Image (cartoon, rainbow, N blue to C red; front, top):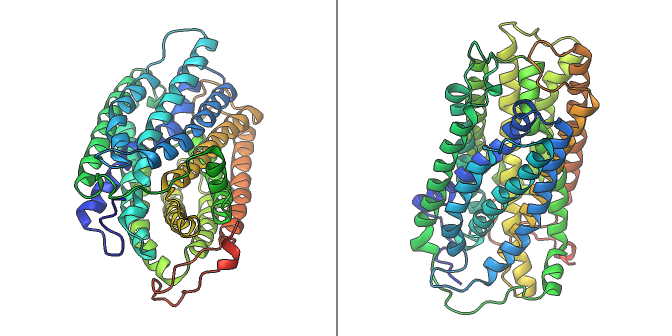
Length: 476
């Protein structure tokens, strides 16, 4: 197998190239989570619960593609190695599918929902063809317990940065308020431009990442390696206990994230009545939190095991992320329009999102540890399959989160084509309560699951003195 780097520090140029490809994933994730439900509900005019259900079904269908891609990339044999043929081949399909998603045909509700289902599936499936092989390069980059977290900082920073830059472009340049559309997010003319810019950036990031890691990792394997070849071997691999425990934590964490992202525009536009300028500042705060996570995640990881760090971080995330909503419910939050409101929201968002991004870094780093421990026990290299399972759950549960968001909007009686400032306070109070309560419950469940993760660093890799590996706990 092409493992040019295993036990040494990864060069900075490789870290940058490895990370840059997630710009595409960040734009896609941001678009799906922040704009897609709003676009098809408030702009196209479809019922929120039907749009949420359709997006959820599309994501669930796509989630079944991930294990196929992961296993096929494990088994790919080419002069460019196992992963890079997939990375290069996905660039154009990703861009085309993204363009189609935001340009639905002028058709009836049923046909438009069918279009959303098919194209939404294609967007996520084409991203899977890049993202699963790309993230599967991590165990080949380094086997060091702490270096993996360091490398992942770049991936998460670029992913968040790319999505937030696109978000800032959307809020600041595309969806600007006009006399005809006081809420620029409801202007249908902005979405084709949003799609075109996003598609171009996604294509560039995928190709640049593949080229940037090509020289080091796009090599034929020196010898044949064992992989999971049969359905029985695939299922046996995915039954590995540390993998299942980690997936349980990711299940609750991603459901919480899916609900939060899908309701972002509803919460900030209708509950807090943010202006366009406040939305632009919000994206800056999110990017600042990504940078803060980039800086703090390694010191935190060197002080404690990744599972404990992930559990603590997600509790911090839900605590700070929901305080403004609890404060509003009991009447102590600044009033809408108050000069203190935006700084109040920004402060809690910064801390909460810093912690939330750190959770993702620790979870993904733990997944790389799972692949090594499993290979040591089974003798099979199945990085793609494990990471595919990780993304399978991530997408499936994020889809459930979006579905639940549409369901919440339906249950609270949120009106279609609503205008900020006109939605009744009882409706907004119900929306606030449903969101805050679901976030707390899911976050606590995720923290409990992370604490059950059994793997630690192998001997000699943990200068902090956390050397023991709980071998008895990791067996199937």
